[in-house]
Structures are given as structure tokens and as C-alpha cells.
Image 1 (cartoon, protein in one colour):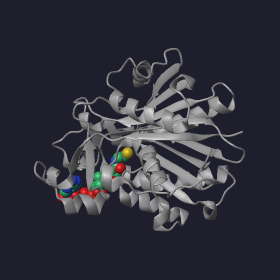
Image 2 (image 1 turned 90 degrees about the vertical axis):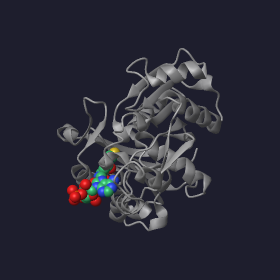
Image 3 (image 1 turned 180 degrees about the horizontal axis):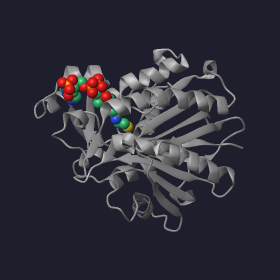
Length: 311
Ligand code: COA
């Protein structure tokens, strides 16, 4: 029996920050941001920490999965913006969920974190080590954003998503995964000594366009599927032009790709999960759909999952 996603949750902080508001303190424009990135708005966590966002998404995912928190056997939190180096966000939310005792760890794979976490969870579920695993992708990027740098400040937003991974019925679930990294590209996207995101946008763009398409194709092959089998693509929401390149590589029409970047910006490890929650609510993802998730991020890292949706 395959492991699959049996429940999802998300949490978006209250304060919206539109492109026009950014125009007021940075030399940029709504027109530039929209046309170059597809972003129109993002949300900023003002009085909440990463663990607060993570906890709220986790609660919703557990409820949505129809289990109780004490049935969770392992917590995996993907983030690069933890409240502090330790304890981990996973331990912090374990305390708030009132489930002391289960395993809990943070993993660091930047924007690919949700895919890495879910692929790890799949191994533990399919080896019968745990019945249910909570995977959270969460970021408070606003605290590492250099608000004077127009190259990066316009791109990112805060948010959280969570998934409960468990066994699903025959034929459904995670069919294949691909995880990858190229440490030689670490210099293109990193946290600098001032604790701000530093990015070579052009290099990251080139890498992402190539790698997102590549990974999506690879994961399909691993699953024994072809492009024609794909019902829906959920790419990491980093830049609409990067996402479109992945969509075109799979030969999918526009309506078969998730697009939430205009609302939330790039929420890093949270973006794919947030998109799935919105798409499920809008009926864009249905049971038995073949869904491909694909992401890339600092590291440089990448990852993809092919799923047959449903419990
Ligand atoms: N507003 C206005 N102008 C801006 C700007 C902004 N917010 N940011 C950059 N510019 C300017 C640049 O200074 C440059 O001006 P110059 O030609 O006078 O030097 C010009 O716009 C074009 O820059 P360029 O880098 O060619 O733009 P681009 O079309 O490649 O878009 C990014 C820049 C950052 C949007 C794009 O490279 C990108 O999305 N890269 C990937 C980033 C990413 O996804 N990071 C997260 C990974 S998880």
C-alpha cells in the first residue's frame, strides 16, 4: 500500500502587503512586479512567529485528515526561518499539540522542503514505522528579507501549510519522487551575514526553468507515467514565468496548473501545500487525478512527487 496525503491545512497571516504598498518604500512598480513575477500581493506575519503559523496549519491538517493529534507518530517541519536554531519548530508545535513523546525534527531544503519532507514521510509510512506523519512547510521570510533590496523584497511572503501522510487505498498515493541538489549553486541564493536573503536572480531563474521541467519529467518516468497522464501540476510558486516553463514542458493547458502566486507571493516551503489547499477547495484537484508537485530552492535543491490523489 502506498503512502499518500490524507489531510491538508494552511495558515496565512492577516496583514496583506500589496505591490502598490511596496511602491511607497521601494523603487519598483506594480506593473514591473506583476509582469516579471506574476505576484500581486503577499502576507506578512506581524505578531506571529514561524511556530505560530506552523501550529495553525498543523491543527487544520490533523482535523482535515480525521485523526486526533495523538495519533501522529512523527513531525517533520520544513523551514529555513525557524524561531530559533533550537528547539526545532517541530518540537515547539509538538508541545502545542499536546503530543509529547512522538519524534520531531526540522529539515532544511529551502523551497523544496515540503517535497523533501513528504518523500521522507513516505519511507516511514511504507516501512510500517508510523501510521501517521505530520509534514509542515512553513516560512516567515519577512524576517530575513532585506526590505531595501528591490531584487528580493518584492518576491517573498509568509505562510504555512501542512499535510498528514498515511496509508491510502490501493493505487492511490505517492507513486514516485525525485529529490536532488547541486551544492555548487549555493552561492546564488543564501542567507548573508546580515541575516538577509541574497540572490542572483538571473542564475536562479535559469536553473529553475531547466530543473523544474526536468524533475517533473523524471518523476513521471519513475512512476511509469507519461505527460499525457497528468491531470494537474502544482509547481513551487516562485515566479509565473518559471512555472509556465514547467507547464509547457509537460504540454499542459493553463487551467491544469496551480496558480496562487498572485495572492501570496513566494512562501518558500509553504507554497506547494498552500496551493493544494486552495485548489482542493475550488475543486481543481479531484480524487484519482494524477498530480505532479515540483519545486526548487536554495541549496540549490529540487524535488518532485507524482501522486494519484485521494485516500
Ligand atoms: N522593480 C523594478 N525593477 C527591478 C526590480 C524591481 N523589484 N528588481 C530588479 N529590477 C531591475 C533590475 O535592477 C534590472 O535593472 P538593470 O537592467 O538596470 O540592471 C532589471 O530590473 C532587469 O533585471 P533582471 O534580473 O533581468 O530581471 P528579470 O526579468 O530576470 O527578473 C527576477 C528578476 C528576480 C524576478 C527573476 O530573475 C527571478 O524570478 N529569478 C528567480 C528568483 C527566485 O525564484 N527566487 C526564489 C527561489 S525559491
